[in-house]
Image (cartoon, one colour):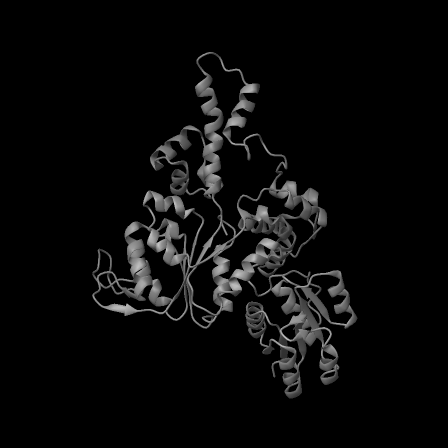
Length: 470
């Protein structure tokens, strides 16, 4: 029989996400937002653990605990509180609570604490305590807590979500979290990457096609909308969708009906839409390459993921999470010193969490001993200076002045010398920002793709070395 958990929480968003997470672990959760409701539930049921907020609609959750203890003297208690003061922490400790979580708290840690209180996690092979087990998103920084709060607000509705952020920040993981914890978790989660599909095939990919609709259509095909019926459709890299496909997508979102390519019959579909992009759609709307009405249809609930450089305090827990993940996938089991983590925190991580994950996997594979130390990092993933070069965060004006102060080209060669000095780093920066994608690098630079290829060849730049993998 599943353990019963009593949750006393008057914040509906927090109650929703905590209940969903605990139910996913197999617990039966009873919820009340008041002391009076708590007392009624305790009179009728026996609970393995009680989680309670401090400030409730009808009083102080800690002050009134004597009533709860008299009804269930042996029930472990976990206290949640937004009153993050020393006084509250002391009061919580005086109740002999099993655990105390100041808000915003980490959901994985809370679920783990509940399991320990119930007695289900007695010994886990001395595994390091890291977060992320069973949850797609990892991090406890204020920036990530804001993301979590936005996610909780869309779990019990079907509002369309637009996730933005740099490449490698984990936009697809937000979609996965919303689906896994939301009301549609029993339905399919179907993902389609608009940037990875040729423009002439994307409509068929989304809406399907009938036999003979175009050359090569030897049979009927079901599109992503129909595959996701009853669940969630994740439209990744939506900014790369061709204009004609944008029009058909807008029509589908407005009507809730689609028509296969070459078909005549409209088909009703019931899907929740989550879209994502690493591009700034505003200038694309101005340029006419992205439909403004589609943007407003998608941007009902915007969620912006922070780059890793804005949440470096998460690098510790992310690194340990990836080490555990790597071991589960068959790589050697590793631990890491605080000094090594501190060294990782000084790096730029332009590829964000994806780049960190790849680096950790490489470290797990190549490290010569079980404990990874700071000096091992340079050998395995190379050195990266902490100090910034003159071109970083200063613009090209000061950087050019810095270059001119140390270079004296001969007469008549100044323009070409400066161009040669700055053009190659500029092209490399564009490739690094786009993960080696030459189409997007050309768009970022504002030049023709053929021009980009020609200059890459002339500057001896290999775009493949900027490619990123999951």
